[in-house]
Length: 118
Image 1 (cartoon, helix red, strand yellow):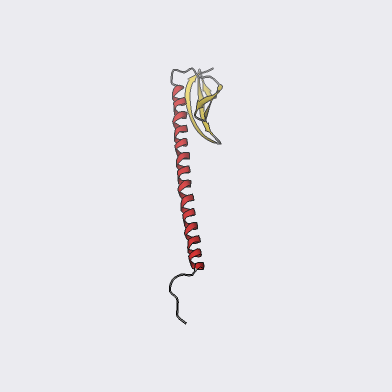
Image 2 (image 1 turned 45 degrees about the horizontal axis):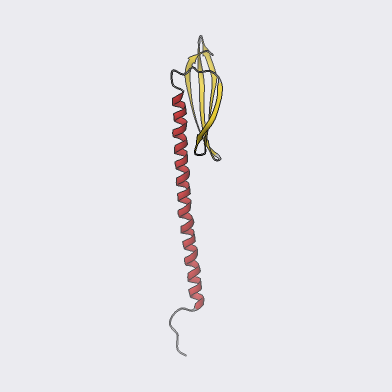
């Protein structure tokens, strides 16, 4: 008998299946990276929006205990919580907390400001 050169149909099919699985893994990895990049961009935007809300509560804002909320558009929703902390004489140390939500994720920034007693 003469030895035949070349690949059998079974060998070609196994090679094709291995190549298809490798392509599928690369495809999923690529789209996973894109999705993570988009999520990181949304987090960055949420931080910028929260910083903007904190800046809006500038030094001239009369601080008093309150809870505010609203819609920033593009799927972002904000909450501002101002609560009094310890008081000394006529001054109170207020806790300011801004939360920016998008989808099922959120970014919270906190700071403290000194103001007159409410």
